[in-house]
Each structure stands twice: as C-alpha cells, then as structure tokens.
Length: 206
Image 1 (tube, rainbow, N blue to C red):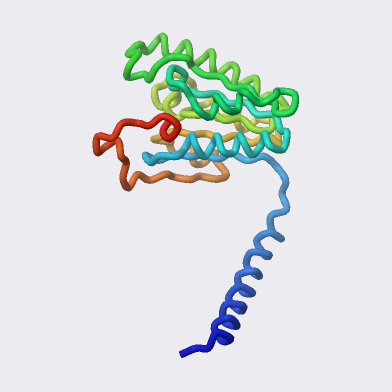
Image 2: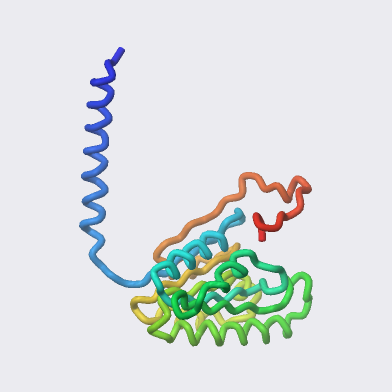
C-alpha cells in the first residue's frame, strides 16, 4: 500500500504533466477575434448557457444584444433581472418576436413577418462594431421553418465586425450552422421531468 507521501508525489507528477499540456494549448491560442458559438441538441440548457454568457459580458461592461426567436409571450426570469441593470454601466438590448410558439400561432405568414422584423434588429447589431456579443436565441427554428433566408443569415454572421461574438441556440441545427460555428456544444436529453408529467417550474425552467 502506498504511503501518503508516495500518493502526493504521484499526484504532483500527474498535475505537472497536465500543466504542460494546458500551457502548450494556451501558448498556441494567439488569435484574438470574436467567435461563433452554437448550442443545439434536444437537452435543456441552451438558452441558459447563452444568457450566462450575456451576464458574463455585461459584467465587463461590454455591449450585448439579445434577439429571441419563438419566445416573447412567457415571462423570462433572466430578462427580468438583467433589464433592471443600469444601461449606462451594463449596455443591454433585449428583443423578442413577441408571439407565442409557432405551433400555437399556426400562422406562417404572420410568423415570418414578425421574425423578419426581429431579424432586422439583429442584423443592425451584427453590423455594429460597438456590440461585443449578439445572441440569436432559437434561431434554428426561424431557419428550419424558412422564416428567414439562410444565405442572408450566414452571410451577415460571417461579415460581422471581427471582434464580435455571436451565440446561436436552438434544436435541430443543420450542418451549415455547425460548419459556421467555431464552438459547437450539443445538449443531450437523458431525462426530463416534463416527460414524467412534472410541470415547468417558475424560476427553474423559465
């Protein structure tokens, strides 16, 4: 059986080896620019991850624009909190479609019109060098339902200011969005309380 000293020495050597790997990775990451992040998959947490980054960017005083496709009828706890922050210190714009889920509205042309109006606001942010972070929440739905032209959307994201980061969220992201993104995370649903008849809980799910 190993002595505590021997265990400590083995741990130290493992951490030294790990540090070399981490340091080498940091040394290679020399490019400074904004990135495209995609959160997709059928699991919970995509918007939550995006809004966490919104809070992080605002914490440094960076300008942030959020455009939420699909959502806008339900109350949003994160928005309630963040919109109380003084704009002069925490520059945040939060835009929504303001309609219900498309399976509730059941009106393709109306949904397209509202999505287009929201996209115009997002497009203005994507052209604004003063905006550090743009969140396109549930954009995958707007693209998959053909409310927006995917060529126009991809081009706008590609041509954004170099230091601007874009976060895209939503289920069913197509391969062209994965190719566009620098970082892709897929949330996978292993279990969800809703499937067992548990109602969405205020302050937890929304």
